[in-house]
Image (tube, rainbow, N blue to C red; front, side, top):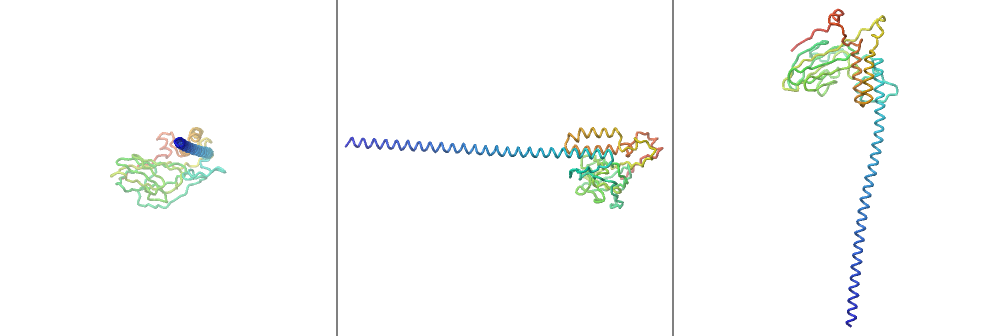
Length: 315
């Protein structure tokens, strides 16, 4: 009996050890399976991240290629506009040209003579003569208004608000806003100190007739000088005039415009292209035969009647 009991106990102990060993193996297997699933999950997530990154890189490359193609088309378009302007004095729309909102918002393409608005919509505003200057003042949060009447269709108009005291801001409107404000105006300048606005005949909103100037007081008290300068349209030259003087722009202006176009418009992006349009047009306005100041002496200008009007100063 004792032998049978010992053998029974021994078999039970062996069975328990085997069962414990089996459980340990199963637990190790489950742990290994869990770790394998964790690794596979991390690999799957990493693979998904890589796939998304590849798709994003592919999308970015495609968008970049499209943007480069669009920018190239825009630069060619802007270059064509500048070439047409140098040849004709008008920003002529090229055939089959892309539609550029930026260009159309600031330029009048295929424009002839600007529209004329003869009705004075702000009769109480102080009128400033051509090349005249007016002194004024305005308190904080208020406006004081001036106006100019011109018949200019080719040359630029320079409006300068020179600060004497405080911080006056400059706003300009046409017949659509005869009382220009910060919220409603066509052109504006709100820099600290002196403000200057240059208006070109090809700008959106340019009209012959009346332009209205509003000066806003940003400081507690503001005093300023407002002067408006422009050159009258040139008189048509007789057939006996020198051929090189009847050209719209001189060879030097054309060469400078072409150099700026090459350096800026073809290498500086759309903003540089639009800047080139403005600069080339400014040079056109300043070229011989387009109202630019000549190199003649004051005596010679007086003999020909090209004497600027006296400055008007009012308080």
